[in-house]
Image (cartoon, rainbow, N blue to C red; front, side, top):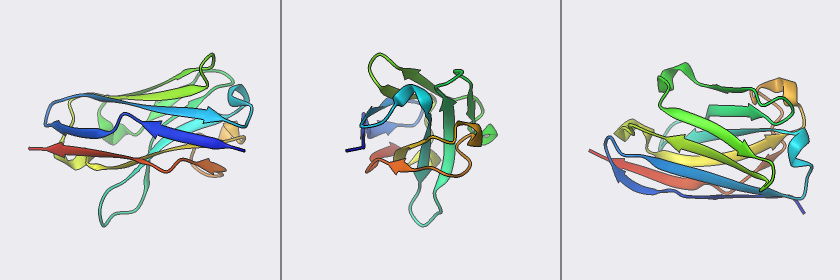
Length: 123
């Protein structure tokens, strides 16, 4: 059974930091690309960051201005999202997702999804 379990969400004040974790199981972690997505209230879900476990390449949305960093630990089958300098507009449910289409840059074809972790940033 495939599982993606997010943790590390919570409430933080503007300017604070959080690190989200996504523990994966049930598929060949090293052969997949994993991404973080978020959905704010009343908005569509959007891609945040993506990491290709095959070659370690990462990318994040330009709008984040380098505040978020995605990383992966294949030994633990876990992907992380370090979020710094958080702003109220970062408030959202953050989802971890995985795809065997490693070339997709997490732009499409996400096959597995976690249940999400709520991040609330107060001003």
